[in-house]
Length: 232
Image (cartoon, rainbow, N blue to C red; front, top):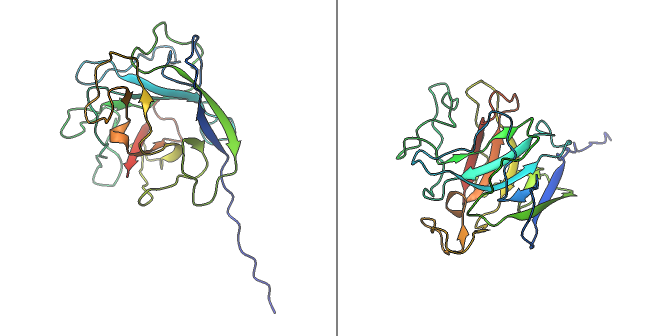
């Protein structure tokens, strides 16, 4: 009798992202809010409406999370515009050129920016004014082949609906980086303008509170070459 061996698929390295409870009083590379760490020449992104985007969180991607190990991931989103992302594709199925700046109907451009910085050494001088700065801690854990739900970087995406795959305008297949759970709230300072469609004045959402999956170009064709998939 021939023994049949079941192939075991390796699960990529994964880290749970834990949000601390005590506000930060100093710059931190892994943080909710705070002072963004940007490459030299990179500027704090602005929405098409002219409002500076809020820094929701940033983190150093662990070295063993390939192919983005050592990159610095930042997630910006406009407070005034809160909607779901909608991919715009070319005839051959790629995301349109410079999709991080392309129209996002009904808006003339995206209301978010998700850069992966490779030489972010120093924080900018200003602190994110709306989102309360909190520390992030990355804890390694054993993800499952189907993906564990939660706030995490690396591992396997836990799709709320079905897997979504996209090809960068440069031709590379985008690779999953990070997942933000559905309904995750980011606390804001008292007196800040409310976010449209949010459920509480004291907190902001990313993409209407949908489950968010950050996919990015493994070839690093541009620091902004990332796409936020939304599902619920």
